[in-house]
Length: 337
Ligand SMILES: NC(=O)c1ccc[n+]([C@@H]2O[C@H](COP(=O)([O-])OP(=O)(O)OC[C@H]3O[C@@H](n4cnc5c(N)ncnc54)[C@H](O)[C@@H]3O)[C@@H](O)[C@H]2O)c1
Image (cartoon, rainbow, N blue to C red; front, top):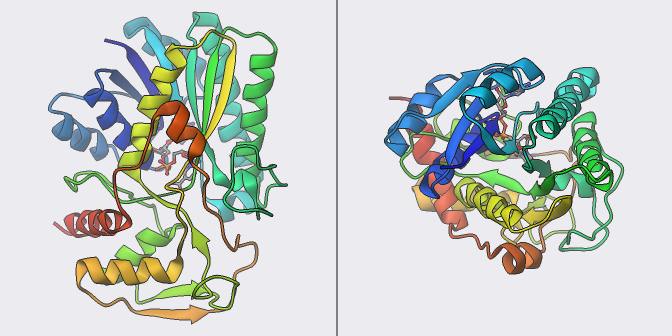
């Protein structure tokens, strides 16, 4: 069984990916410092997979922790989720973001090179495209100047990986540019668990429905879109998790050094108002929302061209927007129990 290190594996996307890795016959080894997750996630994943999820508590900037893990469970690959992701905070504390997001990647790559671990899948983001000139965005769409230090860390990490491969390092890399992950595991045992005020739309929606927040504000309804609100490509987290499994087996077929990049989205754009409507419809409830002014720095519309990931990795999304909205609400409700 192949041991795959998942840094940040207790987080939202990492925990769902751990489940999919087990299903595909891998042994996920989680490394997380719980700076943005709760240790109970490990038990919850263990319940879903029917075995104990192996987890090390520690900082992936600390090479000695990586060495300890490798000594116990010789690693065949890494999925690097661990990062800070709060866009607003990154503008106030940029060094925190550069240190953790960029620093951890360099430590990890050095460690991989020393130990001869070849495969790495990196969590990038559609944020690298900024406000695109043409839609949908393909992997060839030029990246724009980042709107935030967080976004810049993703661009820099992609560049580091490209340069590392160019240096003929013995590695095989896939960067996955996630669009907007939503939804939760259908069991409702794991899902998105934001600390404090959510940064993403759907946790705001579910927390408002649960009465934790009074109302949700839609930032602008006068953009050039079907209903005036911003457009995003919302991808179910289980589909996103599956993309990592496909990326790992793709890497196994390649000769090092190797680099590739894929968009992971549905290929469809939905507006913020459509999300609210769909959430209300599938869950048969009404949300308290208001229209507010436009928010500075918001990308107006973006969705993915998914031809490359469909054709090269054979990956297609299986979950609908309705599934995402149902699973997100079931997850939120489970938190009250
Ligand atoms: N959720 C999104 O909307 C989104 C979109 C695009 C890209 N991404 C990227 O995907 C990755 C995972 O995102 P997520 O939504 O699951 O975030 P998350 O915050 O839920 O998960 C990240 C996990 O990493 C851990 N962590 C952070 N720094 C660490 C360190 N130095 N050592 C060990 N553990 C550390 C946190 O405790 C957390 O459990 C991140 O790299 C993020 O930037 C997320």
